[in-house]
Length: 283
Image 1 (tube, rainbow, N blue to C red):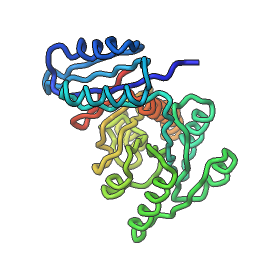
Image 2 (image 1 turned 30 degrees about the vertical axis):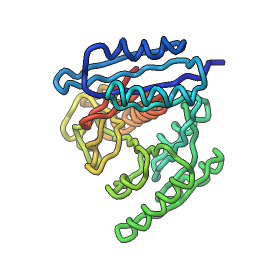
Image 3 (image 1 turned 45 degrees about the horizontal axis):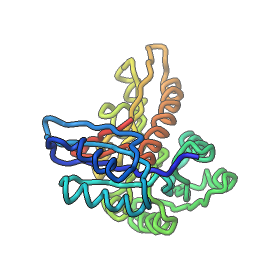
Image 4 (image 1 turned 135 degrees about the horizontal axis):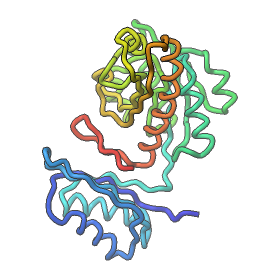
């Protein structure tokens, strides 16, 4: 059984000796680093680091002490987590079910460092499937005239479930700026194109009309600007003139599943730092 670890994500103004000071703080406490990686953005002058270690003492006290050290002595912003914490995840879905099933099965197999708390949908099509998986299903219809009330109910469900993350498994509604502000947690969306190309609706139809030779999928954090949030993970596959739109959709759905899963995994493993609408992703 693996020993519990503390995971810290740091970012702030670059300065000499940061790596040494962080590692020395951990070493002098008798703790043991199991992973460390860093990156510098020379244009912005920002330093990023992910460090994970086995604490020598009480884990809560050491995590709090490191966060204080990073802030007060290094002038860095620190996100500190513990490997034993398993965040709860709310799964938003409409009718399209490939990412829905794939995500649930990955959680059930123990592939994800978290647990699914609930399913929220604007349709009832997947209610029976959710019941078979043993996951609470909440049907919240959404129309143009009831969108504000529907989002208020969705937020109530998310908060009641204790969710730390919302993932949109081809949830075919645009979340409002108000929803994103009030949700109180990050939202990950899977978009069925290689953003920034073919944003918006029917990207496979757009790609077919343009005659591209590659199609892709993009997982990103949702923001008030549609399909413009910080990109977490992307992948592509080749197509050719023989591929019709159904072929693009079939190939694209395989990409969507794997890209979506990888983005959720990276988030739950505390490997992502967001800045300036971009991400640093530590592998």
